[in-house]
Length: 167
Image (cartoon, helix red, strand yellow):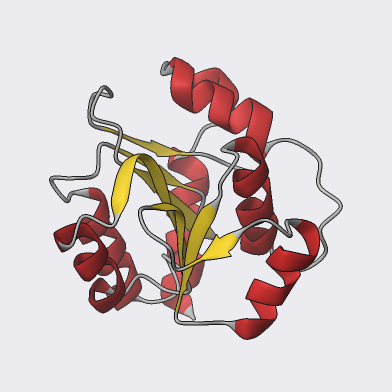
């Protein structure tokens, strides 16, 4: 409990909003996707998933571990979405677990514009360490820490950068 509290304080003091972003791609992502109002009820990260599907016009997503309830919610809003057909546009991880992400990267089940949305990146020391390992991965070029979750990008044309954004 103390870990999460102090981790949150550290995040608040080091995070920024759209005014501290110098990357045009991330600035657009934050202002046109993350800060956009949503009518989706539920956890913040679920709202972010729905916003990302809409913003990136995602067609193929994967949810690890399989969550039938979340898949049905996605299908109700986006009936043309396909699950587990790669290359994935969006990969949603319930928690930062290398057993889920490493096979996706090793088997090249993503493309240049794919994103990975990871929930619970600051839930424990282990999840924070896994998040750090993910964002420092050679394939990942941009990471966005939202405290409630994180977003990873594989854009080859982007310089490797890490952002902490308050939402």
